Image (cartoon, rainbow, N blue to C red; front, side):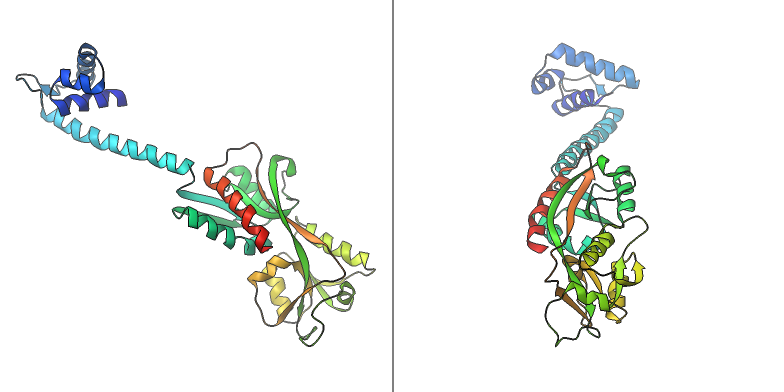
Length: 302
């Protein structure tokens, strides 16, 4: 018994006659009678008592009517849910972000939820290699990351949308650079400070950018710590262990009094930011809409 036959059966049950049911269904009476006979033969039961002018349901027919009505209601609601999901109206959107981009997420999420409050978020945090693997396995749809995306599979399998670049700033402890000193920073001042660098075994782009800029100013930084965690580096700076250089947006997540965040006036290097997803793979409407919101709001927040 398929869905079409179920609708035939319910029409007959509701109208009490095959003739009236056929009119409701916009079909001829003989084909509908044949369908009812096929249904009863397939189930091996009699569904209607045909002894009077009105076809009354047998106990088996009454049970089938109740279950069929419930099934069709659930089926139609499922279709509506599928359509809403495809429109990006509800469901769960799974996204990823590298740690240094977390501070860029709240604004697009806030704007997205104003338009689609029924959509929930699941956020995975990690480095490029972890997030690249999560993308390829389909566990997440979109990643907010520093570019280029240094995943194990290579960049050719991913699509990316560049967002406004993020200028580097000096992040120094007030113990090494008190408040009464100048409100900006020169690269050469790093030469006299212990230096902390953000670097993992896999992702080295930011580390190499900073080293290149230091060498451009004719010095090698005195690196006292390589660390894969932004939070740890910031904690070390706050403790007076040394200074670092990080993208400006990173520091919005760390409003720490013991740290000074200073523009570097003799350098104009930037960290590139972008959204990344798997090339030629279906993106849900929620993911597509999130990409649009992220592209709009990050222009105002980098």
